[in-house]
Amino acid sequence: MQIVRTILWILLLVGMLAFSFGNWDKEIDVRIWPGIVWDTRVPALVIVAFLIGLVPTWLYHRSVRWRLQRRNSALEAATSRLNTQREEEAAAARPSTSERYAPSEHPTRPDEPRSPIDPEPITRP
Image (cartoon, rainbow, N blue to C red):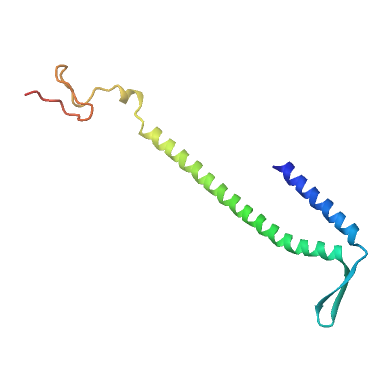
């Protein structure tokens, strides 16, 4: 993507240079206000108009990008804290090895099957 952007900027620069060399001898009067006249050449006027359009747009783009990067960083930090908190809670809720192999509170007889869903033994009629 960077190479495409570089090529476009080079093409724009070459185009402006070609335009400037072709129109440098033409001088125009720009009336800013009554009584204020600016004598300039056409290429200078075109370059100034281009910059007047480019600079505010570029500044807006940079500010939006900066704001979105800050928001993204804040969300990544919050997600990281949340994941750490969940891992700590899961580790605290996980039974230790001695608790894992402790005898159950409700022993069942081997001949009474248990449902995997219901902790109570299944009674046969």
